[in-house]
Image (cartoon, rainbow, N blue to C red; front, top):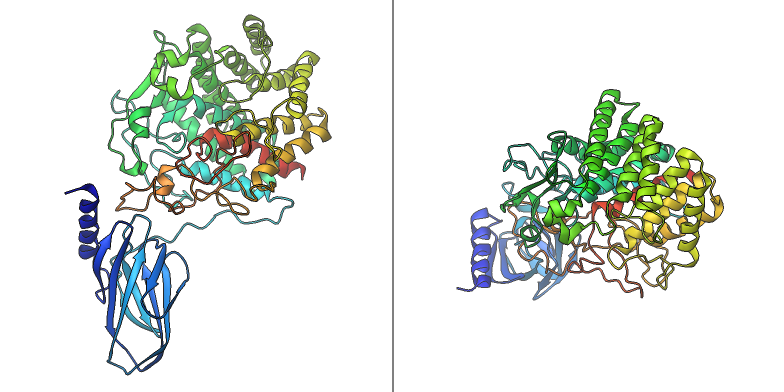
Length: 574
């Protein structure tokens, strides 16, 4: 028996045992559609039929041999037949064809001319998640609403046991045994992107950027009512980092293996593959990883200082230890965690991470010794020897320029920052629409990252109007200011947003979950991944809302990080 035939039998078995309304009988089924008959007695005299059918899961369309059909939503259809006239007790019969994406949609309720005929209360489907972020009316774009939605996206990426106030209702507890292979509790943290690996290096950069946005644009967060959600998003990562820092010179930097994980298309709640834990230690160092995590914990300590001083102190202690670890046992982290090499290899070395971490510790502690350490790293690694193109999880130099100037007021760093910002406006590559294009992979992410740097510069009096308006235009492109696409690149926001992001869990239904065809099914993802910024267009402007396009339509935690910070900045200055 081939796989498709087996699936058909399984679907029929599921439909039979689940107990859908017994006045609907499945006659034949094929992959993605089935034929059924509705047969029941009229509950009263009928002069013109109105039959409402409700399904347990999403239906693409419903077809009839007679009468007409109206689709109310993905779950409810109304059959009308003005010509039908029957007396009470006479049989009403219709042949229907039901087309669906990949989960067999059972009829769980039907109503004939306002009389309930069947309602199966044993089958319940949670209501589709409603956007928890209200529109505010802010113009030209609702930056406050998108800021809220971006934090909702991070809730969709959570690993481990979920809290009671979780707003993403289609997610559940997952990967609770992470770390069991090494005898440590490594549950928690964030799944990286459309997959379920916990890559520590980009997770740490994500946390640093969320922290920077919250610390330097606190007023924007407060105006949008998002301060508590910003702190919660940071804490979900920092709690995990504290668990992962199992000894002074030992840190677990990855859980899950890229190959087996990426071969699995399904919900994280249903994973069965091994999830190995990978670490760095005194024997096998990982300077980029330890340094970036130190930076993340340092800025988080600043963010939490007012609301939870004890937690802030603990974060700072771990940040100092990890910085010392990064500096003392120098080694490219991907050499110690080879599985990360194919996904998040550190291409430009670890000098920028050492300098970056020291600067964030200087900001968190007020201790000039860390400024001196940062200057030593600056000289040792000659961080100006190459031109800067991106500001990203791999290359922190534009952020180093900004922090150095912020902490020292030394104009040499300001000059370097201005050179970079001017190059972005006049020397960088752009799409035909005017989006700065710094990388083919995740172009929107890179535009958002440098837009944040520009907004930060504007707030600190650095060519304020020019940097502010350029950044506003870049974020505007992401939110829908593009005549070629006439679409937002943020799932769930604005005009014609992406509906098919390359993201496993949002493409899969609730349990019982069969997501085998989730990657290939043509319809929208089952769940709306509110707030996720997709990868974005190619240099020549090409983009398609295609789930299989992981270069231009995947989402990731680091894609949203500086984007979130930039949105808070725009709320603050609007």
